[in-house]
Length: 340
Image (cartoon, rainbow, N blue to C red; front, side, top):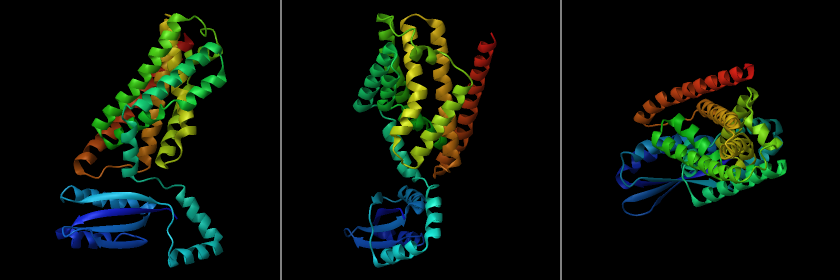
């Protein structure tokens, strides 16, 4: 059983009404203490599945109540007489426990936790910049040496999944400010990769005939399915707060090598090859975004405030239609180019 602790600081003159409402939610334990003459602290121990509903209510209250603060704390262990008895009972009821575990796989973190992670991924930081630079250098060297192992190593350290997932998540919520920051961070990362690979392509003719390079200058309809699968995997891993390392490699497969091939082609003035690499990058980005937006929409990611709900109701379908339209156009270009 996954538990989390919600701590709520409530002004004294609003305590009774809010306390009564909070007790209506399912909880494992409930504590109240006086922090000062003006505020009381309520601690609610709840299952992860109940967190978002409670936080949604607290978010609404915090908009109209001064001095109201909320914190969410993960709980590693919780012991009481009831939990010990429950563990004994669960050990005897193996089938019920398996059913509960099956349901747990379908759970996701609360919107508030996910939004906090998205906001972190939308910022340009020194760590993000250094990892992008290093991954671009390693990937370009892998192209020059025609080494698949080196290119894979570059994809392991490339932090490209974060901003792309942040774009999809913010478009589902209709948060245009966050969407802009996420897009800027993503473009910033792509720009670094392009600049480094352009320099390598300009000063060296090595690597322009290697399989690692040539494979990333050709685009087929199959690449759309690769991008969709990568985006879906990234979105599901993000929803369940799983380790993003392995999924990040899969997303980097679709983003980093084609970007390096595009930069090397531009640096070497091979514009026909650059066009193929550009199509591959665009197809992969749009496919990843389409899958991520769809997964987030299906999972029930929704804002709470009325004005945010209105924006989200416009932004979500508009994003899907826009991305699908671009993918269709790109698919037609790919088919026309193949026939030609």
